[in-house]
Image (cartoon, rainbow, N blue to C red; front, top):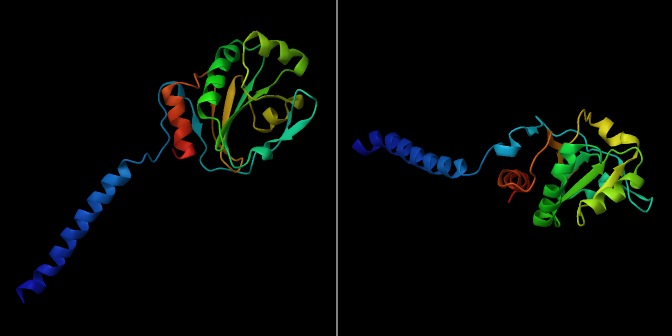
Length: 188
């Protein structure tokens, strides 16, 4: 009879012990992206909407679709050759691409220059940006579709091409906090 009275207490104490272990383990996994340092102005979306669409003009005159990058986490950086903060930011994007590019992540530097490749090519040579995937946004269609209001603006896309969040303004994309943000969304 005494054992039956303590059975609920024992069950409660056991459940509490299991819960505290699980709560401790789950608290080690961040529930929100790290938003410190250069990433403090990154704004995650409340929920991912439809996939971002658009054509990216290549140097040879052909184009690629943003849908070609599905399956990868993609950082789309909207920039222009005349934008001083963009010029400062571009080398860090190249370094991030060198550090994290692969089967699950890439950077797309999407120029907003109306003169297109005739303006972009000399710029790329001057600033040694080899290895950074650069495209031109034909007539700024993609930028307008996502309401880019200032340069630089970076938008992070999930593996289905949906917007995860954005950062308007300059950032050091190879900083520890930026790499931690990319790794968070990549599940690393």
